[in-house]
Structure formats: structure tokens, C-alpha cells
Image 1 (cartoon, rainbow, N blue to C red):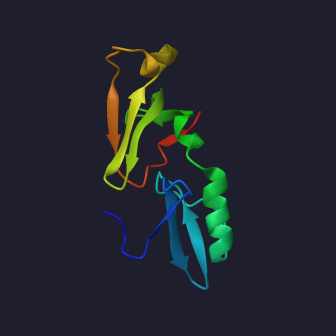
Image 2 (image 1 turned 120 degrees about the vertical axis):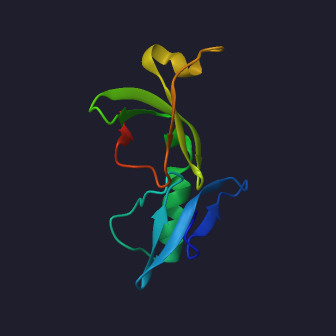
Length: 118
């Protein structure tokens, strides 16, 4: 569940691209995985610009998921919402194969550090 002070930000086409969170005298842009995308608070307009420049393309990239036993699996994000993040195993491109029965993993929101870009 989202904190009450997280303000959703949408692109011009109304697609949500993240949130803007008040922090001190400024704002912190947060991506669709629930992760801050600025090293320090910025002003409102800069937070909007950061989220719009980031867009949603990063969600289509491959990630590595570190499992409890320490192994890592390549995955792709299949869902990202405040209810959680679902990733699908992507060994050899299996996540995009029609009819593939790839392993899926449900992660909390914000996405944990065990999920990182490949």
C-alpha cells in the first residue's frame, strides 16, 4: 500500500510513470518499482522531468533476481504496482515465448534490492 503522501505522476498520455514524494524542502521522484530515482530531493518541476525522461522503458529490460539460496536468475518484469512486483524467469528469452510456462516470482513493493538491472 502506498504512503498517503506519495503523489502519482502521469505522462501526457495519462500513463502513470511514478510518484513524487515530499521530502524536506523538496521532492523525491520514485519510479514504478517504488525506488527513488534522484540522489537528493529536487524541486517539483525537476521531479516531473526526471520521471518523464525515465518513462516506462526500463520495465522492459532484463533484470537479475537473487534468490534466497544466493543464486541469480534472469527475469523480466510482468507487473509493477503498489500491490507488488511480479517477475518472470527469462532464461534464453523464455519470458517472451508464446505458451512458455516460465517460473514467476511475486516480490513486495517497493521492489527489493535483490532485483537489479542485468
